[in-house]
Amino acid sequence: MWRTPDRPAPYHGTGRAGAGRRYPAVVDGTGLRAWGGAFTTGLAFPIAALAAALLVFATTGASAGLVAALVVALVPWALLAGQIRIGPWVMAVPGIGVAGFVSVAYPAPGAIFLALLALAWIAATGESTAAEAVAFATAVLIPVAHVARYGEWREDYPAAVFFGTGACFSWLVGRILRRERQLVAALTEAQGRLDAAAAAAERRRIALDVHDAVGHGLSVVLLNVVGARQVIDRDPAAAAEALDRAERVGRESLESVRGIVGLLREPGGGRSGAQPPPPGAPDIAHLLETAAASGMAVRAELAADLSAVDTYTGLAAFRVVQEALSNVEHHAPGAETLVRVAREADRLAIMVRSGAARQPAHSGRGGGTGLEGMRQRVAGLGGTVSAGPDGDGWLVEATLPLRRYPAEVER
Image 1 (cartoon, helix red, strand yellow):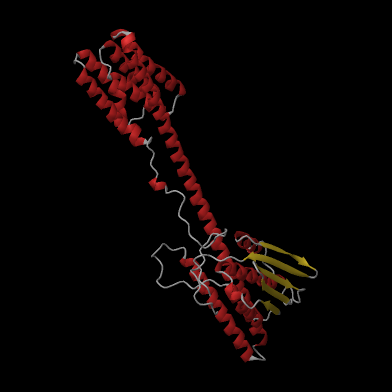
Image 2 (cartoon, helix red, strand yellow; image 1 turned 135 degrees about the horizontal axis):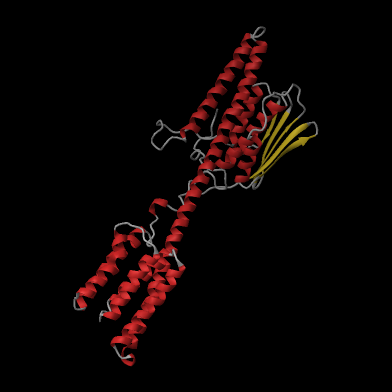
């Protein structure tokens, strides 16, 4: 099969507009990490709580009661550091209640930071709205209670205001971490759906390619074998020529299947050597010559400048004609067929019309992917296709927009 030289890389698209180009994944699921994930809530928060407890020891006189209270306040953080799952109320009672008690019962305002950390953690997990509301209210009241016991409100109320504002910011940070974790989970789920959809689209594309490569090739091989069997007694030379054509077409189909299967291999796992280029619009002429040599009554009216058609439009045009001829051979054997391919200003117009069948149609074929695959290919490039009865025959018409890709070279 002759090819147009200097053709761009083989088609590896997924049947949509712009097919043939490979685009990077929208997101890389392995690279997504949430700031509000297990590391932050399970290790970073406990380390910060331990630092806050050490600050209390450094700024407050140590006593047995203070040490015992701080140990109780640090229990939920120790459980988290040990990767033990705890609930929001388990964190709220010792993490905020006991920390507030330490701040009020002892002159230890640094314990308020323990309460703020616990509030941020509860807001980040978002497991209980009630626990979150109680934790927020308690964290706001702790500095007020501390000032009420140890200071004069007129002089010390700014500290209560500042710590109350800190409670609001702590709650907001927790909420942001929760939202960010939810977004990462949603992105990861969306990436999984995109991967599944891409895999399904690739399977459909491979099914269409196998159908195109094998279906038409076997039809031509069958025509030649049948013709050889009918004339082998009276014209051995003609029979040998038909068998030679069948062998040549069979080898070409086998090479196409090998190229398609090669795409399924992992990168670097296949055999070395460049894949053969995909067929294009100029190859339609050879396709019709092969069909005519196989015994089909084919008449062609092809534009003279099909070599200027871009790769992806040319491939779709070739597949449309190939599928139409295959359908004629199966459903209307012996019918006279007209194939017209015209190149207009901004589109490629294809028409394949077959007359009435002159031989019984082949049985055992139906419900295939031919017409649907044809529609998908054409629609993926922004074109239109129609197929239906036309008098005593069948008519297939397709239009494909002509486009030029930046990476394509002039031919």
